[in-house]
Image (cartoon, rainbow, N blue to C red):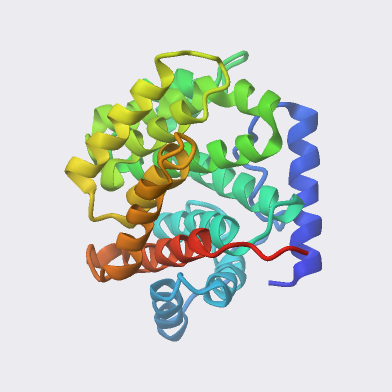
Length: 290
């Protein structure tokens, strides 16, 4: 992935979103109108290898570079399109500095995930109605839409937070509605995704709600009871609740635990575990003065 191209793409998405004020589910798709290129066994084997190495930024970028011309719409390959959304999210979250490029990757991931939801014809029909928002179509979702709904909400939240308080507030209802739906469809999905989101959101609350911290703590405690082996939960607890609450000892204890433990469990998320270990190490490393 060429840096200049990525930055220009990110700027284009960011400016378009500012102009429209809402998510465009098809903005992230390739402007090419021709048929997607055909994949072969060799390419599929390479995809599998790069995906297994998604903790590495170069592998993620390479996966995106190869997958895009082969997967020009979610109908070409639902699985690969979803992995493209996740790859863009992970590249933004762990390998890209704050700025237009990172915003573009988050927004592209959200757009890709929502485009997948539009493969559900009932959802698409409802979401395209005048004055409707994505959350108005949530009753149409079924089990096969669960993962796309999660990555749409996750990516939209990261994009809106980094875009500033006004945009975060604008999309809060949508994000909350989607995480509530994910939790209703599958409690504990992705190691407590809903608990993790609301724990972070309530901890960051700018509303001056005195109960927000209590709700955040309850969500994080639920995470630790039910999914304490997932490093993303432990690191989030340290970053968003322990340190802001002034409990530096707990902050360090949580992160040191992540660094010491093996990332091999759960097996399907080894790459994400490795990435969270790297984040824990970075958080414990004092930043040098410029």
